[in-house]
Image (spheres, helix red, strand yellow):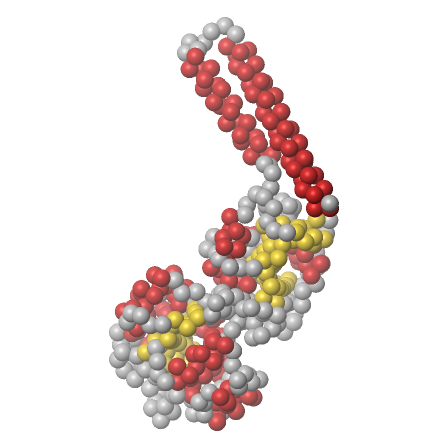
Amino acid sequence: MSFKGINLSEAMLKSLSRQGFANPSEIQLRAIPKALKGETLMVQSATGTGKTLAFLVPLIDKVDLKNQNIQSIIIAPTRELAQQIYDFAAAFLKEFPSLKIKLFKSGIERDESAQGLSIPPHIAIGTPGRLVDILVGKVSLKHVNTFVLDEADMLLREGFFSEIDKIVEQTNKPRFLVYSATLESNLAHELEKYIGPNVPVINEETMTANNVSHYLIDIRHNDVLTSLIDVIDIIKPYLLLVFASKKETANELYAGLRAKKFKAALLTGDLDARERKSIIRRVKNDEFHILVCSDMAARGLDIADVSDVINVDLPNNLEFYYHRAGRTGRFNKTGNCYTFYNNDKTAKPLALIKNGVKFKYFVLRDKQLLESKGIEKSHPTRKKVDEELRSKIQIAKAQIRSKDKKTKPGYKKKQKQVIEKIKAKHRRQIIRKDIRRQRVERYKKENQNG
């Protein structure tokens, strides 16, 4: 179905066609008609499926250009995301020349943001704090009929709902359009004061786009930077995003890649707004082929043609996995998401598998990606063996002390003998376990071949 099958104006259809949007995505097809009818919506959709257009198209098409008041407010959690939404919206101005859109975001001087408000915009876009500073008590918001909360779960998690409350108090019961890749129960509960209970959720079955392939790579405790370079050499990405949970790790990987002459850039929370904007612009201009990011960049970062994502680790909040993976495979393009792990730390990968992520499994060995059947649990590592042995020795020492409350002649010699016996017994147990393991593996292999 094309956009012509939706009840849109000729100007909107012309604008969408000019911008190269011929057919709506699944979420656009389900959300836009409802939004055009003035319904309140909660939309859960994979990143890269067109959520931004899903709310911009009905807002722009239904704006009353004769009413020179703010009619819609779009709130985003970060200035980068607010900027991207504004850029999307500004692309429609050629067909809607009378439409006024204004961006309010942190990082812009307050006086600069307030300029031009003698004639308010039809659509205000911004971060919560800046919208409160510029609009509340200074501009009438009684004509606002639509509130859009983009990346709503992040707005809640970062504590922005107090600022949102201040803005909503100035309005006259607008309808809400809530969009996010994830919608948690506590978010739905928080939203009830705005939208009431039992608003149905428009969602999709998958958390990331269907055209993203997911890979788990066992790097076998090898150095992360070395493993990253090996995988880059193997997959030869067109445009790669590398994600690390800690900015210190991101900094180290960036420095290592630059030392090896890779065209890499760095995007973390340490950069100011101007530096981040410059980095994204240079990536879009093909000056860099690798962007090393902290999780700050995972939400709402819209860079076209990202072919691959590599997670050198997994975040503590596994929701961020979906936002990372969603940077590729956008707008019906294919993409790949690779995740490093070690086989003695599998809790997070197993949690993603339980949550429905369908991985293909590989082991990185000798600069090759070798396919495996699944997550192979490791045999006890040396560290675990040593911890087990130390525990047994401590127990033995305690037992000797309890029997010999007073130090007797030969106490230390007796203690040393006991410890040596424990060590010898422990070594024999490890050897026997290893022999049994080898026998089992050989038996399975012989039966498979037979």
